[in-house]
Length: 366
Image 1 (tube, rainbow, N blue to C red):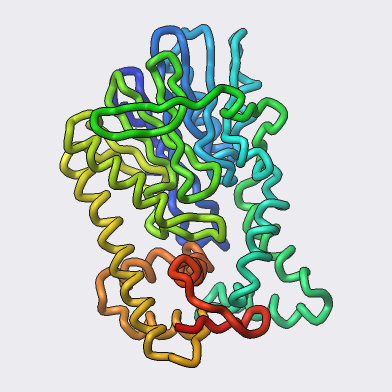
Image 2: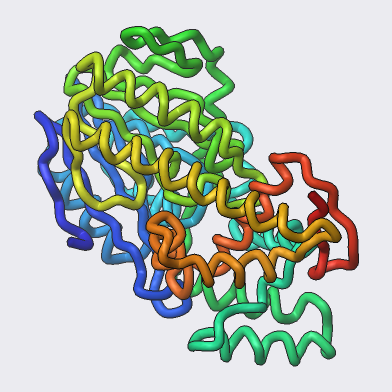
């Protein structure tokens, strides 16, 4: 349940986030993990909203005393960094805050999201949605485009980000991880690149969900925190990479099979998974994504002259008896619009299909 503090291992606490009924009404809050090893407290992501901030502080208080705190962000999206300023609130002499260099720019949230949506807009109109609410708001936004091309985007972004306020990513305390030279990390029979913090926390490059994404391994308690690499839509942003997501998941499965990891925490699956349950979950992510990709590619083959993303989306809705498609559609609208259309776009771009046509109406050619 949202805000619950769950002990997942010795001196290791999960603060549960939440998935919204619709992103138009409430925020999507990522999980946070607090871990103490020796006299160092590690805070992995900070979620957003004042309520979640108080829950993190309560978890931290329960692990006192400690002499140092290190805050890591898995990446710069607002549902993971909104309470970063919490580091200034904790009374301890030694403080450090790290995020990957590629994520520093993303701490300017509104500007970063504006860039992302402008990129999406090349291929399909993000204001096209299903006929039910909140599509009414989107259709109204399309009408007011006549007053200015970017006005609907400004309204959409402000309305969405308002749910996360106050956003305090604490850019002034953030240091790029790359200030420390990355090293090869060998965990069992898996190779990673990243950073070893005193054998307490391994910070490992992932770069799938976003170019700045890192994941975390706590070797002493065998906890693997995969953040948004386990988000069902592998490439839900224009800068996502499904290939890198799949690589992370395959390596993570090996960690559990070889007993190097025993507990899995993800960014938006608000439960703790152990052993075989973690492996089943990770395999299900791969299976569903492969099936989704297969369905998208099958649809485009039926349109030799080209097809738009919106048309593919409608065709997928007609195949919602397929378990993977049914699952994806249930996650997407109105919980996470317009992610599924972005996933469709990314699948086709990664597969190398040609693109032609005007802005927001581009066709992909098989």
